[in-house]
Structures are given as structure tokens and as C-alpha cells.
Length: 207
Image (cartoon, rainbow, N blue to C red; front, top):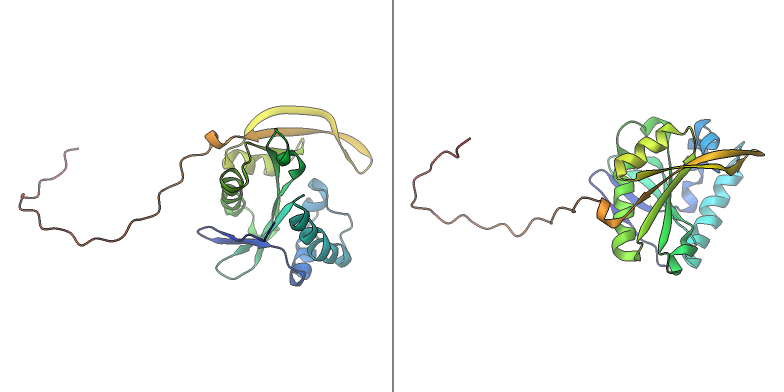
């Protein structure tokens, strides 16, 4: 698939580029990211270089995953990563995908990941034909679950011993999002029109 860039009120989402390796490496030194995601631990600069230089472009090229760098419009800093994975199910009658993300520590608590997530799932439903979006996280990842709920995901339960992390089987939480779960996107503003004089006297609107 050709690369796609999405914009929101405060963010730009674009595919990762080789020049992003250093900032990805720095963000992934924060312990919570390797603890709750599948990134290698310890996370080396070579891991970041392989991710932005090989994994991301291959995912876009073969339609197996679409990974976005989430950037602040204000200063261009890396807010986090967001991607659609398990896209093989998109090419079956299931028409499903999975949303994954992490947020740099200094940008947490500002609503950025929810804002980016809503943009990605709307794009997936509208342009990719996704009919069911899933979110999966290791049980106990309260931060990720809070973000998923704010995006609109409905929690469906716990899958026991579903995930193998650091050699141990762990439970995971799963949630889903359907196109009908999202609020209607606001219509873009129409052309500005000059007001037409109204001979009717102004009357206050009743409360």
C-alpha cells in the first residue's frame, strides 16, 4: 500500500522513517514500553534502526501492518507509535484488524493517543473496509485499557494464558470496536456566506 499520512487537531501520523531511529530508541528506554509491548528488552539502537528501516516499510509494502509515527504538530516531537496489525484477517471474510500503540512517557496523560487512535480507526473503517477492530493487551495494562475505552472499544473479557511474554504464559484482555460504535464524524464547515439582512426584529431565544 502507498504510504498514508493522517492529521488531527494536534497531531500528524505518518509512516516511520529511518531518521526516526534515535527518537524511537530513546522512547523505548522507558521500562513500561518493553514491559507491556512486544518490543525487545533491552532495546538497542540496532532494534530501532531495524524497526524503522526494515519492519515498517516491509509492513506497508506487503500489507501486513501499517505503522505510524505519532508526531506533535506543535514541535514535531515523537508522541508515540500506533499501528494496524494482523492485517491478514482483513483479506478474509472476517474483515478484521488489530490496533496497537505505545506512548512516550513525557507525552502521556494529554489525550494524544486517544486522538491518534480515533483517526486511525476511522481511516481503517472508511478506507480499508475493516468491519471489526480488536484491541488486545496483557491483563494488568490499565493504561492501555483506559485509552482503548476512550477510543470506543468495548471490553469483551479475558483470554487465559493467551500470551507468552518472557517465557511465561499470561492472560490478556480483549476488546472490540465496530463502525457503529463511533460517534458520527462532524461535517466539515461549508463556505462562508455573507448574512442577508432580516427585517424581523431580534427576539431573545427562550430558555
